[in-house]
Length: 386
Image (cartoon, rainbow, N blue to C red):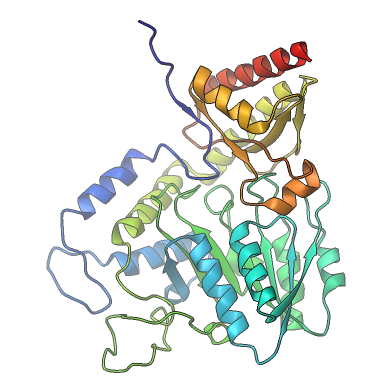
């Protein structure tokens, strides 16, 4: 009887796996007691996970105003809250700037608002996976009110100079939203230095938490009106949504297990050390790219990613076929397709999509070697057939 090969999981840019044992244990322990928060109840055995989570995330992101840390279902939810809330606060049609590196969590809200004739959008193209801050500055007009920008590309693994952009926009009075879905947990993020108006994060990727938790940090809530209303556990006799933070944006029952996983994930990262994690990720990513680049039938779309993400295609094979072979033959899970970033693929592969490999702290050197050899074998076989 043939034994199945052990699973090699290389889709961490979508959702990291496995989760640290400390995260799993913390979530399990939290489920042993009833949850309450927002003035909804009291109990001697209860921990204030909401306050603890805000403190932990603010400290991790280099900020010191926990009430400005808002929890949401994920980064997409956070981006929708910010984008729709900002546009709704404006009295006239808004000119928006963004980039061709963006995820559909930005592109689709913009597309909808464009069809509603509430905004006009210009997308700044990338060159060698990087957005030149000067190009954003050149595209600003007297009607520009909002800029939404990817911090780290989920396809190319490139990290943008958002500090230079935010500094310029701040001086112009233009609201900035930075999507940190791929960076928070992988690289140090210091919002006091970057100084965006809002920064979005998600818990289930590099922060090593569970799905269903994310959020954003916002400096001036007056510029983003709430677009959803509901129970907050406070001022319940008032039918108006509370103006105070965080109740201004947080409605309904919180994802307490998710917040617990976020706390435990951040604590795990701190226990290892961000520098140590970065060094390992960079070494493994560099080694795989060097090996794969030596194969003529393999195209690598970013030779020097700052994040542990490798985008590639194999000549003569559809990217979905490569992913299928890796999964069926070697039990290696990668991601294929457009990765919810259609503008990126229009630029790098004519919209065909690609194979994406993404590593985590738990990816071993042996797994990297096995995956590299498997992809090279596929490429050689395909090239031989051609």
